[in-house]
View (cartoon, rainbow, N blue to C red):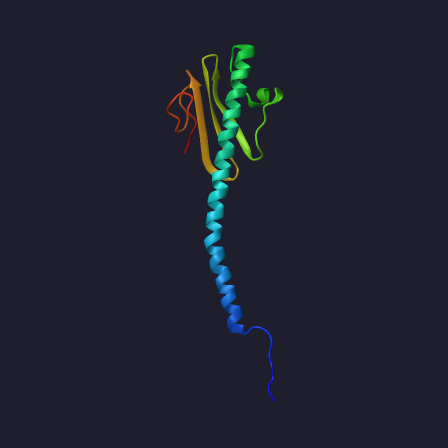
Length: 129
């Protein structure tokens, strides 16, 4: 009499676990890279929006806002996890640094007579390190 057995052997199950583990080991670093790129893109977008808010404030008051709360009260906001630091704000120019809680990368922008900040070396060009 023959006995039919259904199911997987222990070796087959171990091979499936090993293959799934290898695929996961390959996929995780790629996902982290994509997430980091998304965080940087978000920071760049928020810094550009911040620049527009600063120029709008200057148009109304002939001075740049030295406090992020002042711009926030006028309707300027940032994306979740993004923080903006105004390094300098005078009637002649401003500089700002943007960071995100999900990455160590920082983005910098300065304009006018403000001192360059971070790795930014050209007036009006957004730069990230």
